[in-house]
Amino acid sequence: MKNQSKAYLYAGITIAFWSTVATAFKIGLRHLDFLHLLFFSSVFSFAIFFAIAFFQGKLIQLKSFNKKDFIYSAALGLLNPFLYYLFIFKAYTLLPAQVAQPLNMIWPIVLVFLSVPLLKSKVNLRSYMSLLISFAGVYLISSTGHPLEFQFSSPGGVLLALTSSIVWSLFWIFNMKDRREESLKLLMNFFFAIVYLCIAILVFSSFKMPSAEGIAASLYIGAFEMGFGFYFWLKALQLSYSPDKISNLVYLAPFLSLIFIHFIVGETIYFTTIAGLILIISGIIYQKIR
Image 1 (cartoon, rainbow, N blue to C red):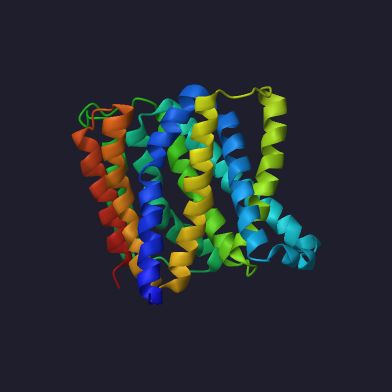
Image 2: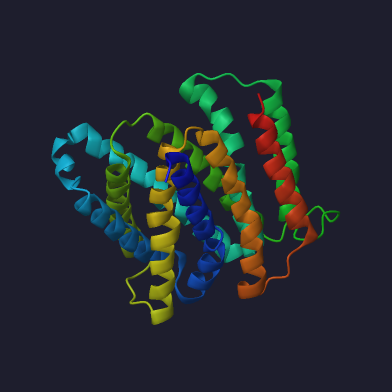
């Protein structure tokens, strides 16, 4: 199989995973609070990355990490998965899945504007227009089917979902500057995130053993959203001769996700969700056009 065909295969598998995770988040949060769901999901994901590094013979490379590398991993782990998924999971406790899931999709636009101070990039008029288009979509989705009432069902949940896109963009920028092997970086990110989560649970909650349903949801999220999802997506980008073509495929996931949200979670899909999602993705694609 040619590399490009393998890239499409890995991308297709990843999109299939990611189209189901919004449903898994909602189901998991029925059985665990957001801190415990993230903790157990991160543990399972760490185990997956450890196994991948072990079987690929890459664990030995950890010996070459210096103090600066571990500090950088601690900082990246604070952004993702710790803060990113804290914001996401808390947003899912406050919002319908069909609202929380697409609001995070504006991160490519946010990335452009954060690149100005952090990467010394320039922002053109097209980027501002893309931002306006995407935020029109954000408003429609947040209105939960009542766009003319000018009020959100949960402003706090909307803010958390949008903030997660800022955290992800920051993580993406700082991760780009880190030239270490990707699977080892992710392994160390999850290690430090687990440390942070232990502290957060001790301070704000207490450790509780989850039910079988909670363990199953955590395992699914840890494996398919975080673990194999991240790994297969990175493989797809590495194998493709045109990473942009692979990146654009990810916009299929939120539309497929609505099907699972409707039939498994039981949410009635608002017309504003579909219209808003189309606007957000249109804004992102418009920004990418050269």
